[in-house]
Length: 177
Image 1 (cartoon, one colour):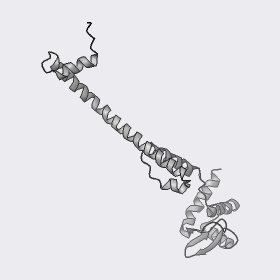
Image 2 (cartoon, rainbow, N blue to C red):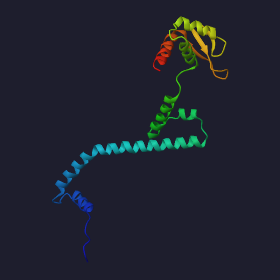
Image 3 (cartoon, rainbow, N blue to C red):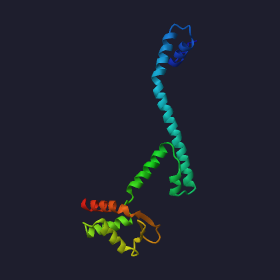
Image 4 (spheres, helix red, strand yellow):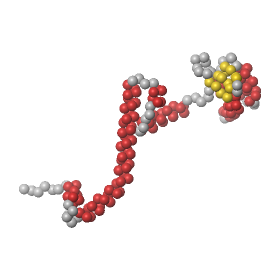
């Protein structure tokens, strides 16, 4: 009978397991050195596996919410851990970046600044007083301006002290055009 050729892995296993083998000491030293050099990669692999498992759990949570017909508010409350969290947060950030930042009061201030680019804070406050009850401005009381876009929207409030900053931003906006 012909003797079967032993694979390289089997040879290495034989050498490592047999302390009397002439190549045992050298093989053990090489094996230990290999283990030391692979340790950082093993840690990276553990992290990658953990991230994959977290992403898998995130996907399960998202599918479950979709199946139940979840609203965007439900998605906002969702605690994601892995890559799904990064993806979800980046989508939310890009959505937030696209939204309009000027509220109804700022648009009104922009209109006044277009009419009179040298308007002061006191003149602006008088102009806002005249606008009271005619649309956007609901009331100006106790150092606070109450305003809303329409009756269906909730009432927004802004401090009168913030008018100076709003006026500055409006003038800066118009001068940049």
